[in-house]
Image (cartoon, rainbow, N blue to C red):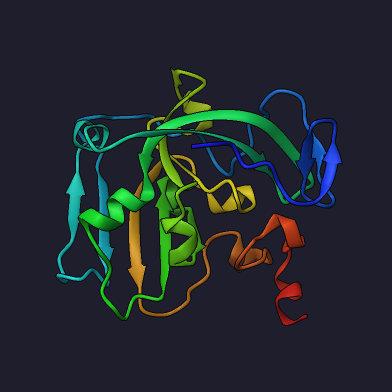
Length: 203
């Protein structure tokens, strides 16, 4: 897959969403402590409004045996900084949808991470060929601080839509806000139209 080049303001040879400035390196930003990976107790689950009504679970080895892709992407924080040219390797989110399709009545997806962190997504955003469950960055396993063992990467949305330490995907039959959406952040989070805050949803 080719890296997303953006649609608006030029910054050197790249384009950035409006209101964004490039940051140096890859700053660590997260809420709460960094969890410890315990492979014997770790699983990725899919539950909620699945097509079969069943709940699914995979070990880390089973997850990493799924089809994989590499993407190059820029990441955009709602605070106004962007980090450029990331190479992520992992499982395309669409592969999970094919393995465990949602029921017809499913209208939204909640991505769940360690410590109860959650992020609300539209199915089309989760199914994008740009959305992956990353295990590696720059050819190396993700560090714990950056989301090892599994990080959801949704590069066409602000970063709070891509939880580190991903543990579950919930199919929902109605809209429900995630962690930051409940705290005043936009429910969709498109950086190209600066959807940063929930009060903008009515405009």
